[in-house]
Length: 463
Image 1 (tube, rainbow, N blue to C red):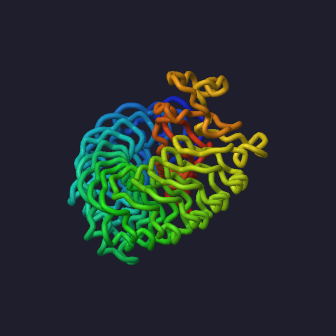
Image 2: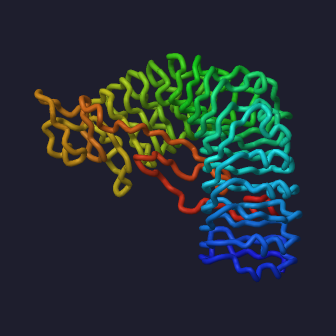
């Protein structure tokens, strides 16, 4: 027996010690079960093993000390492993894919420095005690995927990452990284020196401007620099990245300005978030040219004027966030075309009239989250939806009538819908770093896909 695939069979208990007799095994796939234990001694008897998949089980304790000279793929993700990476890991000299993500691992990553054959490295969602600098993984030029998101790592974004010729995915989001992005290294790249498609650095403490030369990253499809401390104007070179499908820049300290006109060049965009970016002026008519948009977030800015009729051309929209601006007027009749809309936030503006273009004709396709200024401090129906909103001496009438809102706010109530609706893209290697769902944390999940796991063959590129 050379290949054993028992993925997703609800197998429980420890891996049997009798597996040691399967000494001709080359691929063992036990992922997505309920296994609770593993004997490294038994597995080490399978000395021809090339691929071992144990992710998405319930195995606790320290990482096993494997001695498998032919192993090139090891996935231990989504278990309950604790402690540090064992020194024996350095002996897996042929390892190309290593997945330790979603455990409770701690300590240093120095042991991985000598494993220069690594191509796919997933270390995210652990608690590593590690600081990365310009020497970190400097010799790992074969790296294709590197995910170290939500790891409590400190330091900077190394410049050599942008010189790795095979790197396609770089996710360092939700960490404690500081300093400016390495502008000179980014500006020196070209089509032959970088294949970077997915760059996620959100939720760090990165400072400085968006670097000049960022337009050299021609392969970029996904760019997330949101929730940092970046300054300056929003670099117009981004308008040259025609392949961008996902652009999140919100919650930085960029200079005040209008919605950048170069955005109309990015006709492949599917998700765009410029939340809380000091934007002013009106939403331009050309916004309707971005017809692939599924998510548009312009909330918490200073946008004014009325909504353009062309927004009705965004017929693929699922999520539209416009709250906390200075917008006015009525909801355009063209919004009747937005039949896939699931989340709509227009509260804390000055809209008038009613929401008939959104509510009428939807049948059972009720909007999951719809918030507007449809409350008054004497409205029984409003208090039934949003709780007690009294406290003002003078009557305050609803600004807009809404029959299908899930939450009615009153302008004077600053606590109504005061959660930040931030929908980061938490990419997972199991889903090929494609969008699976939008997680708005306190406000819930929108449009969840129930099963986004790739097969083992897809995940490892096996035939």
